[in-house]
Amino acid sequence: MKKKLVVFMAAMMAMFVLSACGEDETSSDTKEVFKVGMEAGYAPFNWTQSSDANGAVKIEGAAEYAGGYDVEIAKQIAAGLGKELVIVKTEWDGLVPALQSGVVDAIIAGMSPTEDRKQSIDFTSDYYTSDFVIVTKKGSVYENAKNLADFAGAKITAQLNTTNYNVIDQIPDVKIQAAMDNFPAMRVAVESGVIDGYVAERPEAISAAAANENFVYVVLEDGFATEPADTAVAVGVRKDFDLTEKINEVLAGITEDDRQKLMEDAIANQPAAQ
Image 1 (spheres, rainbow, N blue to C red):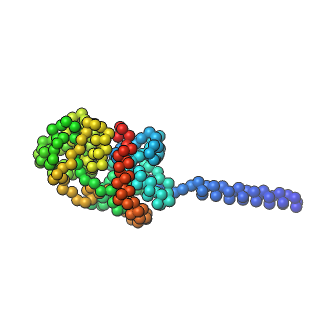
Image 2: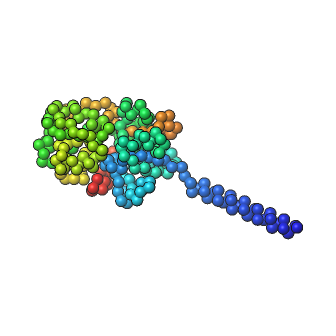
Image 3: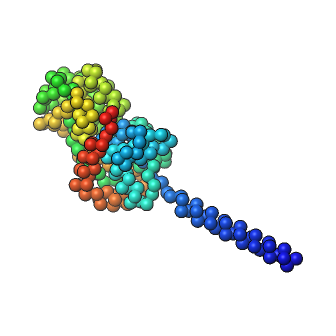
């Protein structure tokens, strides 16, 4: 009986040790994730590529990777939060619903913190500020335009549900075209002559001209009348999100010089097809 009791106790102790080891291994291997939604199709802010070159991050549920300025900002935020970054590729119109439903924890996708959007979600402090320009085809009659009036009669569009599209009517006698779902589609439309140009933030326009020698962008002397929120970019978060303050702390630690360097690198690193 004594022998049996000793064997039994030894077996119980072994099970306890193994169980404890299993718990430790699980806790060390498991790290909270920070799920970020983006189009992965808006270079140089974000794009899709086939490898992890230049620090690109694997897209959840796909064999592809996401790269770009937004990805670099997301990486710094995730590190500051002590979480593992997960990129969730989502169509532009699906980003806010994905955030509201908890599919993603934040939107880092070149999104402007407009008053309309603030009705349904909150935003952090800005992490980039730009201005609007017009991308057109090299050699077109609009290549050397200087003012909004120089685009009179032009067929102009912008991305669906963006502040870019809302300013087009400031161009006198413009032929406003239906908004398009994404920037790759607009670039194709410009090159094929379906449209004469599209309104973009300056980094996207620089990216377009860098990726395709047939594109130029026009910086207007008079420019579009905009609100500060129209050309700013911030992180979208759920209402009363408990990590908003911490994200703002991380963003505050990224200097303006660092932000400009990240954008320059993103433009230089974008895949040729973007």
